[in-house]
Image 1 (spheres, one colour):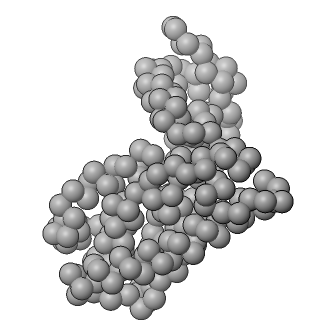
Image 2 (tube, one colour; image 1 turned 90 degrees about the vertical axis):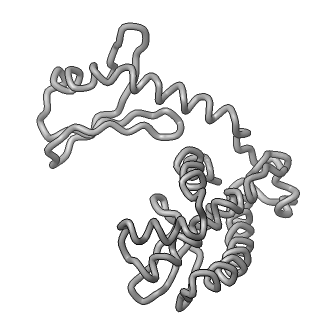
Length: 217
């Protein structure tokens, strides 16, 4: 579906479902999805989206700027990939000889997982002493929506994509999840505890919010 504004137009995908409100989302590539209640006329969708034109345009421009800050992903051995916030040629991170693109992706993912496991283990040891909070265990997995989690069994989980982020952001997620061992919600006591260890946690949080969408294979 195409929606025309005064000085620009957008192409968007409409998804209908059992919902009460219309919702707009823009992915890192700039693809726009509008989720609408079943049987909503296109005229109603356009009417609801039109007032949001300036916000949509600003978001698309921001995404374009952000994308320009990161090298495009190319699996040719010399394509640049992030590790601890810095870009490296792929062949400096893994052995790419004789591997096709899918095999390189799998190898790179294993590289991230093994290195993040080592790093998380080191950082937990540092912060558990300061917080006097010790998890039962931790693991590395893959998630599209969370950087980390803490279960009621005192088990921590970390997203392998954190290996691409600066160490300061890894520390933030480690401290965040360790603090959940004492406060399972995000109340004031929880954030005070996080802030007592990392006074600048909001800056680290903002990095992941802003650039996290680009920390991908």
